[in-house]
Length: 234
Image (cartoon, rainbow, N blue to C red; front, side, top):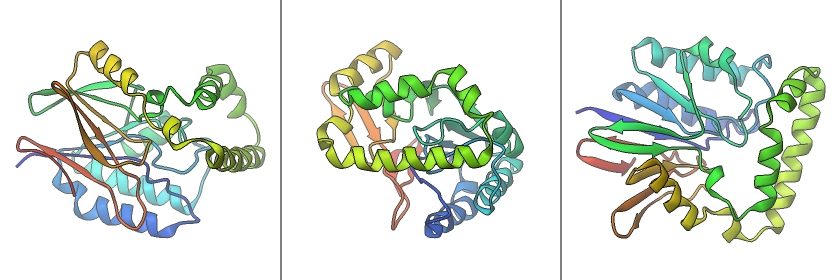
């Protein structure tokens, strides 16, 4: 039976090796069973440029390369943590980068996929931050800073993000339901798959819309399997 896997929000880092172990296990045992793999952002906890080298990055590169070399396509949509991941890394492992919103055909059903941060429109501070860091000229300047400087900036941003989350209401960090419905209407789809909020669930929106949310990875992995028989988390 043909099936497609979706994952997101692994937040891989060298500080949490158990997450890397989970990813390697998934890539070696379950991913090869699929006909396609979609990674919907925040594969890494932070990405400061394709020129960064580490044991973790090399492990991920090798695992994706092994999958794509078997003829299984791997697609990636940028998250809010790894939006600087570029064509250099993608080409080195045979992974294809997709835009912020992408419509795909899933066994005869037209489905919209995205990371999900753009759906959280009530978080005005984050949306303002996102608008700034998505500016191409700013990214161009950042990527030309020395690696050590980028690492320091990344750590400051990471710490500020943790502090900000502690003072934000949980509600504003979730998706805006009205915006979700308007986005699905705009793209003319009945099914939306996204990550970012870490709240694994399948939401039925009357009368005929479905929003599927991928969970983050912690003690266990959150993997969405889609086939002609339907959808399930495994």
